[in-house]
Length: 155
Length: 115
Image (cartoon, rainbow over all chains, first blue to last red; front, side, top):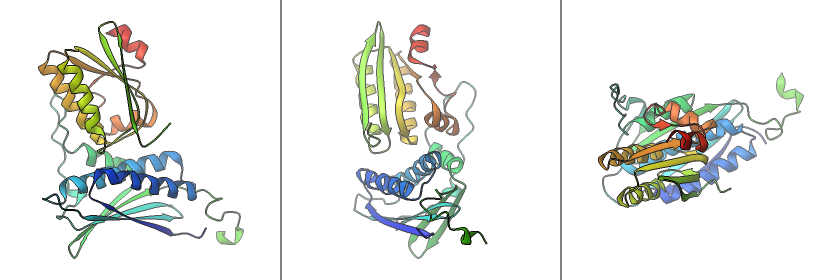
């Protein structure tokens, strides 16, 4: 299968729709032979970002679409999350306050902190009235799935 | 084993209330876990052991629930203790900086011996 290849799904701003995203990610992982550990880490990171969008991007309870583009490349997988909610650059998210000895951390910021460690790159752009958040996980995709064995590709 | 569902099963070992958790904890079902934990606390349980051995996947929604439940337990003179954190799930606790935030034992047997 020639790369890059993009799968595209649209979900509503409803946590029940996260299951559709899981299915799409797993299908991509299987089709391109993504290593299990890389897929796991990318899935958690995507879940964190999309869950944040669902919870905080819009003030009311109206239905909105969230568009997700999953692109398999030779050197990894890129997931772009597009929403028309309020501007939010996850790279700017405030660092969690340092936990004092004997104190438990507060929940806020844990998801973003984890996301930064789970993927190799987080890119963000505001285009028109939309947030484009892109997570990149570098990994070798399976040779069988990406047309390996074709020695001409090496030159 | 379903990767998309959250499974929970409770049992008792003496005074310890054990909740075996399996499958997936995310923002779509974390509330179910919190409700279960609050139920234990309101029925007077004082030691709640959460066994994560069969958890395959979780997000920070799970951490939020654990932090909220641990606070609530303290208000009830109770405690929430974790065990069975292994592999990639344990790594997520490490990345979130949360391994030190909770009382964590190795296996369920280790936990029960210590409690």
